[in-house]
Image 1 (cartoon, rainbow, N blue to C red):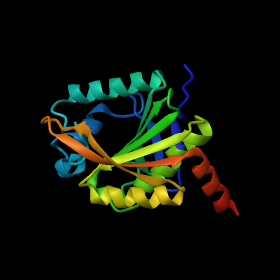
Image 2: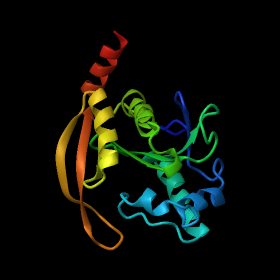
Image 3: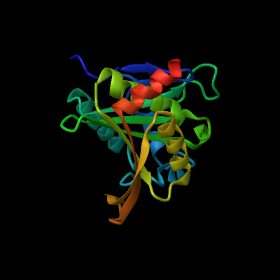
Image 4: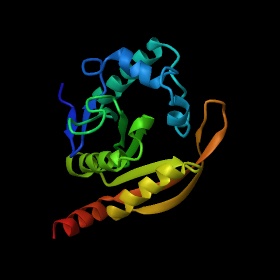
Length: 206
């Protein structure tokens, strides 16, 4: 079956591969999303509705759902791995997400990273790659990026690449998500329009 999403994306320092059973070791992925990961609470602190996985079965179901959404052309989950020259080359550094709303011609970007890979600029590099997919491959009209209102590290990283691509801050989304304990959470909302992205790309090539 031909997918609208690229199965593999390479950037200067990263490889993004489709999250699926064929390409990812289930038990390795489970270790990084469970209490086996030393800093898992910090990693998932600002990802609403996402608690550490309790069993490999939970991770299997997560990957099953990722495969199903991929096949339906609704959502692309990727595994992020640093390239050979990077510290931790070949390891699972985290996951990247592109969720598509075809009716609104919108793509929403997401990411999680293991703590040893924080502070390297990987989030921005992954964003650049998925923005290329959003606008140049899928021909969508807008890219959306959100983060929890208290997540200052992510907010600063998002603002940097959103500005680089001509996008803007759209304000606060009240009660945008609900945590696993039922607490509603406010989110910052950013967006990049297709014309803004193309204009920034044109300026960069001059």
